[in-house]
Length: 130
Image (cartoon, rainbow, N blue to C red; front, side):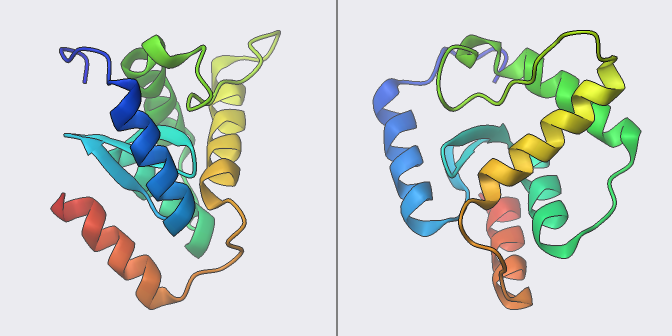
């Protein structure tokens, strides 16, 4: 995504709508997905899925790595509604990354409180095959 041009509003809007209707991540282009109105890369989508529906513990180093990559990759979208930001006050980067993960998981999960293991498996497969 770093070398790509900014995504068109039409492609992004279409992905947002499809994702909100399905409750699943939708591929916009290459490694970029939208899930319930939230833009993210493939790795973030996988971690969010596992965290939201299987309660898999996520290491602080993984969270920090995803957060810094997210900020760099999607910096063009900070003023849009699809970007997940956290208040960058006095908190350290580790704390901000944990707040960001919590916020992005909540937004991606949306109003679907649980998914069946089969649904989670199908979403994981679709994330890996796109």
